[in-house]
Length: 326
Image (cartoon, rainbow, N blue to C red):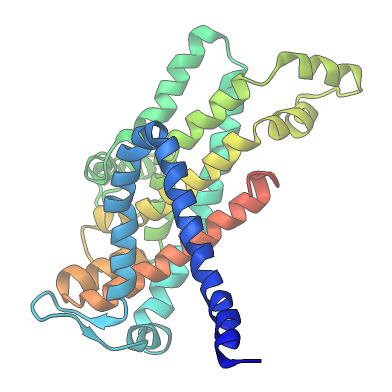
């Protein structure tokens, strides 16, 4: 076979992947142009998502591999931030991470269960009273951390004029004032109580809406099939019928627990909290990022926190999501 004939057989084969990619690109551009109006409608959300979510996440991921102090240019240091986080940051390992996990587990799961129970109880009330109870449960979630600390600081004050201490002293239940927000023993308990009070937010409204929109014919069919109690109705009808709303409530409970993790600083008025009793990953990030200006390590901590939230969200999808949604 001549050399020219061999080249004519080899070169077309080599050019085939290039032609395939070119055809795919042209086909993709034609599809985009065909549905240009639809993409125009989603453009505002897509632009905001890229600017305010995607780019900050990618920037944080890049900065987590650098040393950056906000004065000098970022310097690439590889995995040093993560090595320090896992081996030498004793405050994170001993206090911040265990406190964050225990707080998120108690407040997230406890607030989620309370939200569902309250939503179910409110759903069986007459319509006249339902809106007022819903408003009373939802309103605390609108309060900011500053407003919440203003409300609860007099209540949990450590002296005799604090509302809770004054009541307990008058009832002879305690002999001396309890340091609710300034002692290692009681700070976490106070944080959990205040956070549960504030946890009836959007997730609570979503579950209430889901329960109210369950088809009443399902309950009638359930009674015909042998369901005799309200508990059986909740287990066999209400929960399966409100899985999308319960998934939404679970995700919001996780996000809310992370957002409320800085409540210890607001209640005690100190950062770090007394003996690191209420020290969380978020306050640890504030310490390194806003006080020490070690922004590279602070972003590495945010990546760690983002990873924890991601796996918690995946667990929620496994529990309440359907196969089609996954």
